[in-house]
Each structure stands twice: as C-alpha cells, then as structure tokens.
Amino acid sequence: MTFSPELEAKFAKLLESYPAGRTRSAVIPMLLFAQDELGHISNELIEEVARRCKVTPLQVDEVVGYYSMLHRKPMGKYHVQVCTNISCLLRGGEELFEHASKALELGHKEVAADGQFSLEEVECIGACSWAPAIQVNYDFHHFVTAEKLDGLIAELRKSH
Image (cartoon, rainbow, N blue to C red; front, side, top):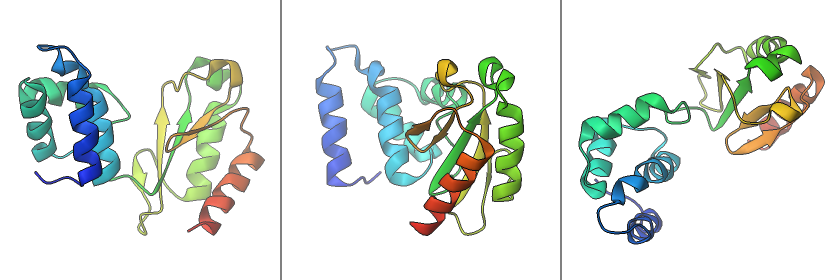
C-alpha cells in the first residue's frame, strides 16, 4: 500500500517511539493518521497496519470495530458528531441531533451526495461538563444550541 511521504514519516516515528515488542500500541494512531489521508479504513489498510505493527489483521479489525471514530466508509469533508449520552441528552443532545439531521438532511452515519457533510450520533465525546457538545472533524463545540449549530453549518458551507 502506498502512502504519502509525510504519512510514511509519521508511521516510522510512531514505530520508533515504542519499545521492541510493543509496536501494537501504534495501531490506533496509525489507523487515525491513515484514515485522515485516505478517508476511511479499508481491508487493505487493516492488513498493512497489522503487518507494520506485528499483529494479526483480525486484531486490527477488532480495533476498527470497537472505536466509533474509525470508519470503514468515507465520511464527509465535515463529519458532524452529536453526542447524545446522558449529560448531553439531559441538556438537549437528542433534540440537537434531530435538528442537525433536518438541517443537513442526513440520518445517522449518512453522507451528503456532494461529500461535504456527514452526520453521526455518538455516545460520548468526553465533554460532559460542557453539554450539549458536538465535534466536527477534530474540533469540539460546547454548549451548542440549535442556533449555534445553524451558524456553524453556514460557516462550513461558506468555506467550501
């Protein structure tokens, strides 16, 4: 599998940072970096990460299946994740997800036809003290209201 020189450098640095026999610890960051470059986790990528980290493809596949931030299909340029776990739920997270669904005309784990947006309802993004919270790609947004969400979506559409 071919990666950019920048990604190859990241992989090399990752593998060097772990003691011999502990390269399996690089599986998650390697998958995240590769997903950022490739857009999703393919079977070929799973096999490549397994080879480099000296684990089985099944072990890598189990990691991909467990972590919701790893995707087997391409997500939108702007991947909107709305937390609906208990803290966010109590502060309007479910209503916020419904609002996002209507505003983006997308359901859970759907991608817009133009590839600009995707939407996902998630269990927890670790921002309970700032509920309701959303994440767009790697950017967190706290105390989100329907109005704030509309403004954020408008800004993202403008930057397209």
